[in-house]
Length: 183
Image 1 (cartoon, rainbow, N blue to C red):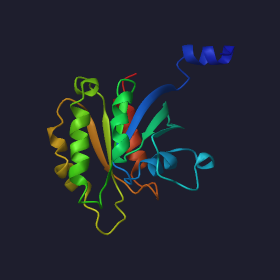
Image 2: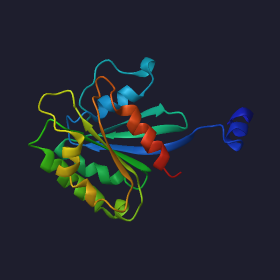
Image 3: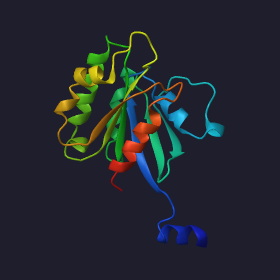
């Protein structure tokens, strides 16, 4: 670490780094959302399903995010819990047009919220009701009702309607998250 790095850290000029878990069922748009949050020159042109997990970084006005983009495929969801202790926030992505799997998303969310490494922590959760551009998409209010988000009383949470491909709703979510991350 150089002298300038040390000085900027001491003066509070260096951005705080936070670890965020990006969770949700497969094909919900997690990787597309994270990709869209990166600077345009660092974005991937081709998005492929995540196998296991990947680590991505992006910056906001005051924080440097390290995001653990976790696969949502059924056989990989048991890996999520190995990263709960390190997470300082959670981004949970829901495919708003996939009504059939909304019940599975709720089950995974309930499992997450009841895990010992999450249950007693006041960790902020940002929900993206994604794919709002699709004809069959339900509103973010309806997603909130289907997932029973009103029952989450011990953690700050927020839901944003989003279209990851166009980037709509993403900045609103990140802005909210910045205000609730404890580091």
